[in-house]
Each structure stands twice: as structure tokens, then as C-alpha cells.
Length: 87
Image (cartoon, rainbow, N blue to C red):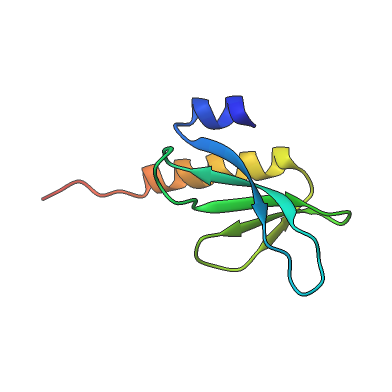
């Protein structure tokens, strides 16, 4: 993942995410646009799925980290092609 994020102009860090109630702290992967920015995406794995939590929005389950990365690239390409020329 670290190599992939670097190729796509992102920064990856592993953080301890606060647990809820009596849960332990868990490791999550945080993706940032650069080392000084806040994270825009948290990723963690449970026995059921790989979960992605965007900065704004609901958590989304994926089958694997590969599916998450493919989705990020697809979304990035969609954003890049969804532009209009200035008049």
C-alpha cells in the first residue's frame, strides 16, 4: 500500500484509532494528500471486510485492500474526466 500511495501522490500512515466503549485501540491506515494534511480516508480490516471511512460519509465495506485501491483509482479517474472546458 505504501508503494501504491506514493505512485498516486498520496501519503500513508498507520495510526491508532480510538476504540468505542471497552474496545481496544486498533491500527488503521490513514491516507493523506501530503504529510502535513489531515487524512481523507481511514482503512481497517475486520474478520468480515476491509472497511473504508471517508472524511465525509459513511463507512464502506470492501472484500480486499486491492478492491479499495482499485476503487480509489476509478474514482480519481472519474473526477479527472468529469470536467468541462472553460467558455
